[in-house]
Length: 231
Image (cartoon, rainbow, N blue to C red; front, side, top):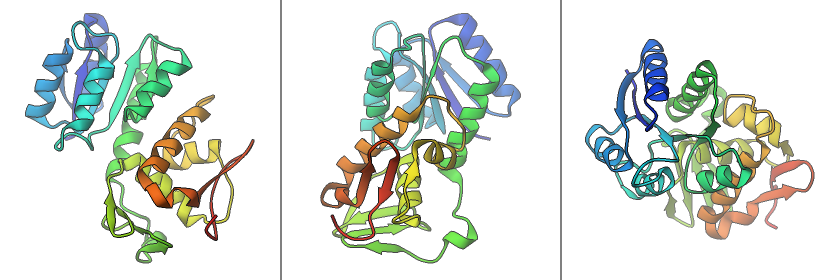
């Protein structure tokens, strides 16, 4: 049974989330403040954190940053839940390492579906036709069975979403992938108007790839492509 930590200071929303997630079969832990959320995360090591941004004391952005700094928690996916609907807020959250961003008011059913999609990305094994050994391109090595990426023998620490994004592009090397296609394949869910989510993850992925970043190419007005040859 997957463990979900909810950090939310509004009692009605906390009760609504807890009920729906328990009905979906998850073990739920709750916190109403950022400091309490961090303590519970360190104690329980949840499989996913649902995180409100506007919290008393430590806000959600700071909590997300601290979670991603902890060795034991940095791979735990974070779904941000907030009334702050501006695009800049979503981008800041994603750049801090959040895997998804849902604005209030929200549909509990949609939120549960998004959580299932995030958890599925983190635990899914490669399809049989994908397990053909490692993908080695220039200094970049992608090992789908070990879920590991190396650049010039340096291990690159990627989130489950970042790994799936890179692996998908590398598998379709030379073929342009639109943002909508990547959202459907990588995120496992169709998000209307969430193309900037892809852009933010691509930017973060390139930063982590360092000298191999140029292999991921932007096709203006269309999407992204993994190069066939070095740029």
